[in-house]
Image (tube, rainbow, N blue to C red; front, side):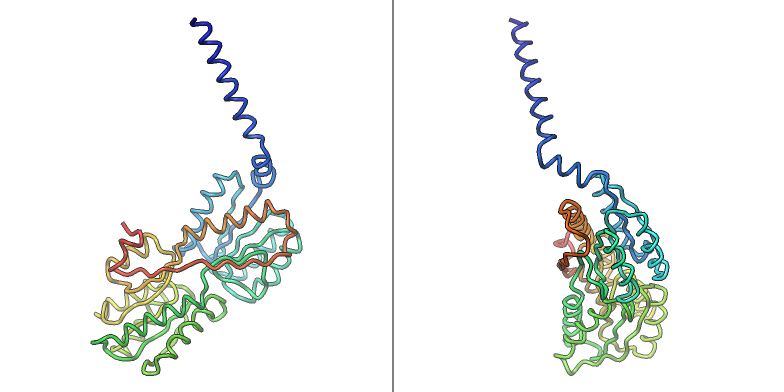
Length: 326
């Protein structure tokens, strides 16, 4: 009886392992192993010195490892000429796909087209260029600007607001993200003619520059009702300037960014009043999903033009628990 049981067990195990082996060799697994495993992706952010780009990097690296993709990160550290050179040097090396964060709508257009022409897929994230590559995935900066402008109007028209004067702080004059965000802000504020933008400043996404410029602004305009600051990675400089001036919570600081721990900590402390989060970890999943689709599709690079706008959500001290802040 024991021998019979053993024989039955062996047969069952053989059937199970044979089934498992067949499953690993079915059409989906064959396609995955052929088109995904061993492929190479290079990620080039604007700078790993900024929180948003690090969140993307960590998540993309994890997702690539899980999929068996070779993943490399190159950091130009806010130097667009260096970023251009990095992309140009990749073209003869022929990675399968490049994910690029584009700080200048013009500067990288030619080299991105050259990468596509060389048979390399190109995904642009959050900041696009005048060249439309295989995919753009990122927040709709104009819509984001409208939301930020509406939040500023609400703060400045609230009972007890110190004035109707506000300031705008943007990251760049040449980034498509910055350009579109400011357009959205101004479109929203145009519906409130009682409000006045007393100054617009550019800080190159640098928190130290942001601190210096906002310090000067609040020294000249101590009654500001709001500061609308493009990106929370730079806006920490504005938060510090407001704290030193004794204006935290009085002059409302409205910004946008990656979400997660960074946004939650600044909401909890009251340093940032409103932060429109584009949920960077979720974005990274979308980046990798589209990357994998392109690799499996065998579509000729440069022939499809895909745009995917990712959502943004408001984070405040009042709703931060509902937004996943622990």
